[in-house]
Length: 110
Ligand SMILES: [Zn+2]
Image 1: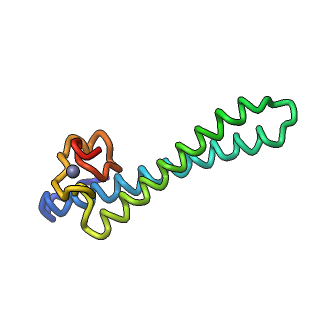
Image 2: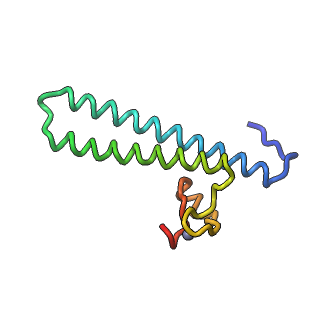
């Protein structure tokens, strides 16, 4: 994809962040769907022991939480509050957002 350098870096990087957040959301949803399918297969199979179902259910809950967090991040980005701590209002450092794109709190509030 050819880079458009004419729009200025601030604008371009905001778009870049938005695209990245949407991509994260897509992959979180795909991941949750895969686990959901797996979980349903386990539920349908009478030979599967409950412990295995429980382990997958816990994975599924985690995957759903990740989807919800990614949705919130996309929403915050759209409303212009992305990158600010939801608790204290401080700016979340770029390195933290790089490592945890869906972070909604700064390191000290997390
Ligand atoms: Zn904070």
